[in-house]
Image (cartoon, rainbow, N blue to C red; front, side, top):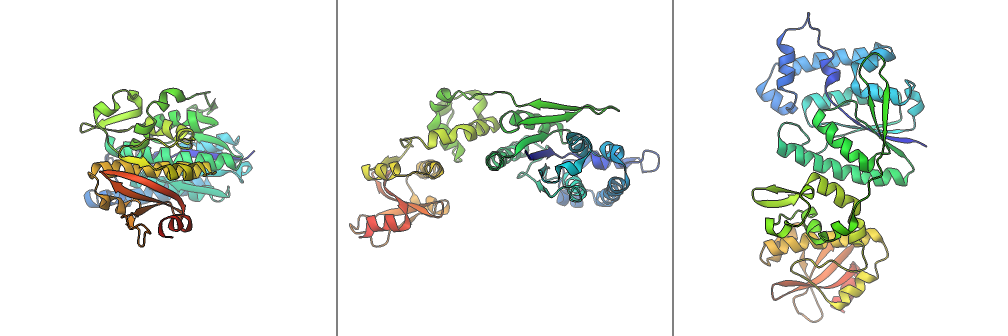
Length: 382
């Protein structure tokens, strides 16, 4: 079976190229100071650093291109893990799929590109993914980056498993904070997590996935709140006080979903959002004909997409005090032209193919029909 290998990328490949006696003494200090900065930030505040990074990049590329297997593994923690996975015969993984996860920092981007270019000569499929704002510069950026990474991994996990891949997390390289999070995430998404003992022996350590089971009944008690939080809502402390602390985070007195809450929700949302009954979201009412349309949906993911859209509509409609103009910016909300009963029927989109017709009544949004463009239009205009 082929492998889907996710490798975290750090900066050791660059710092390993420093020459203690030959290079200026401040190079190491400058690299440490700029480790969490983007290329733009470095160019603005440390104009001497780009030339240092270019020199180290050239040295690293030369080392990988001319070095033997041991020298390559010593130069790069990431490649140490990948080579060890294949017992130093990387060509055995030619048909495997590799992803390099890196920060948005200049050093991380350079390191990932060097490794990608090197491995391109040995494996068929290797790509780099940079989660949005993933950086250890501060807590806010780090949290946003991990949120994006969890969402990306959740989607890739489903695709890889569908295609029959075994999933490996190579956590030999990368920033320690990211490694720690990836180790936990790997308990959900990786079949195996690999590390390499440091030292001359460089033994590969393989950690199998733990048999983690989610307590669905406990999560179900909070399914509406978690669906709203996942859609982008921020709730009051009183609204979420019974939710397990690890699933939420407090920012400026409001509650949002935490990294681990996002991870757990991604794992179980299909079970709740594709259930036989619609969730009872605030400010949303379902007419009987809408419930009948919902029960006709046969594709699980269509149900999930609909209820995720309803969660977004619900919290935005409530936060705007019933002003539907805010919905036009996120779900393409429009008045229905030519409604047969001229009762002020509106509609919004669920993805590209489907739409929902609705009407504002006494400060609540009453949902009428769900289906394709032709189906809903036929119900409301003929």
